[in-house]
Amino acid sequence: MNYPQIKLKLLRAMAWSGFILLTGLSLLPMPELVGENFNDLFLHFIAYGSVMWCFLQGYPGLPSRKLMTGLIIWGVLMEVGQSFTSYRFFEWLDMVANSTGVILGWALTLCHRPVAGIPEVEVPE
Image (cartoon, rainbow, N blue to C red; front, side):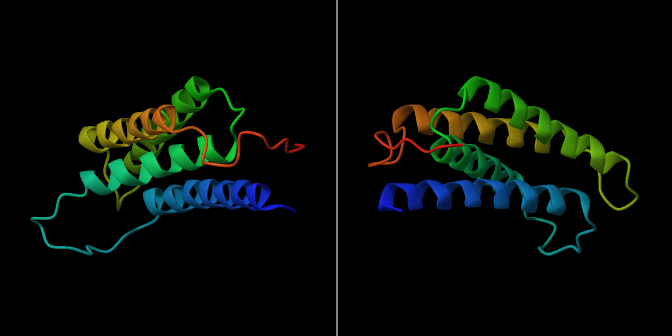
């Protein structure tokens, strides 16, 4: 296995780990970790953007608009899912931050796709 293939596998692992982690963090009870003045919208923005970026970098052949649509729907479903719990709340601004983060990850990938050294690699699925 050469270096570009290792990078692909690492990016794929990061993408799926982020996806699973965000799903868990979105639906499990969370203690109040920060003061009431803390705004978590930036964290939503960065987390969803990072997952999008890792998926597009790790899977260079994926149709980016379909993935973007899927991750935006996933972010909306995470917020809707929270409304069915007694310990989490549906928040419109979180949904906007999730979606904006996904769009940022997509835009960053358009500017720099894929990570240096990966374009020439043919990875069997």
